[in-house]
Image (cartoon, rainbow, N blue to C red; front, side):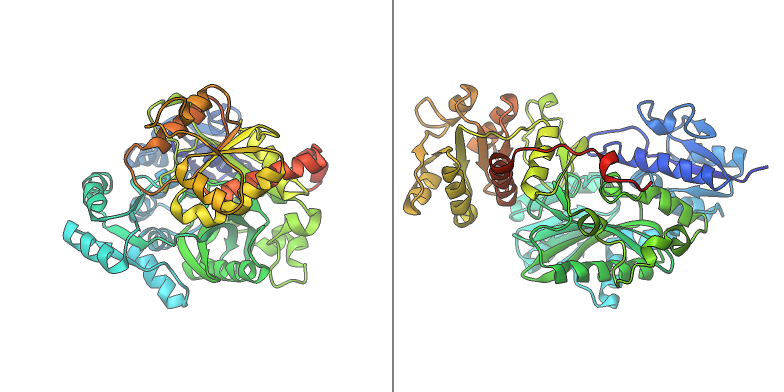
Length: 530
């Protein structure tokens, strides 16, 4: 009789969670069956591939909660249980299952807890001599005020064990912090709050890797296109890095390997970094499948979730991927895409804004996307152009661009505006940005604010006069003109960008398209490896 492996899925889909975890679960099922085990899938979402009748050997359509999972384990008596492919939901069951002497395959619950418990993780980072943003733990309102004041506003506040950045917020002052805490306590129950210094203006990176307990395979280092403060699941990302120096990325790979070994990772791990002024800071590590695993796997041509599953069953990376570990490089498998194909792969996300007419379509630390797309090209700009088009936000080649940015972003907007002007676009701006652009030699057309006489900027968007919008937030949370501009953009399908890096990427995409045009590639043409 075959030994059995139970794979726990992610449960029902919701805002802030796409089907990326289902991808990982299906690849795990395939790997388990290839290795001669019986694969038993537990999930309760009828719209996933993992719950198709012919995906696994046996399917239990049950909630991912301890009581139901224990009933299934009691009936099936598995060789082991996989918790790292369904996101945060099954990961929370690792400790309770371990206490009942149920074998967890891959990274062990103690290591999972170290990574998830913000205080324990910070102690590990200090022990390894790595850096994290200055932070503190608060278990009461009084402690939170004291910690935030010591670090200095703005601060990033978050509870432990959250999905999709739930209840995570960028807080700009004491009043906002007090208003937030009541909500956070309700979400996190008795879990303490972690308060981080917000690294304004930093570049964020995501790293997906697989470890077998000895060797570490770095799948890719992804550079976020949006700036710090936006949840990694909502940010466009690029493989390979496009603006950072190679030395920074090599050091990020080294730190990833050290962290994976220190945590005793067996299987997948995702690490998020921020780079500011040449310094590397670790934001967090998740010893599980991340949302970027499908994107990375398709970009590099190696199915990371499937490889990780075989590693969890006892296989070694050097046996599974001899062609990778025979490469004479201190950083094997870190940049397959750039080394072998000289291509850029860009992930862009899809949002449900049109389903929620009152929600501000502004990105932040709490995840709001429901899916993602991918663009590939030898040119960074064209890869970004393809990704935007696939996400339903085709970039304009002519027309009027509205620009209104926060004071802190005004110095960086000059070159972007100048490039748009050279590309033949007319620039519209409200008074503050208009005067700044004019002082820097950029011809702009003054447009009325919402509070001024009509036609104002929202009227112009609704009338189809605006082809693209660049509007960075000031940091204030109240409903301002910017809120109504963003809502009008969504309603009228006008592409808009709320960060300088995002706007710069869009301009580069338009420039590349006008200069070169598009060439379409298929993954099948580019990848012969399975």
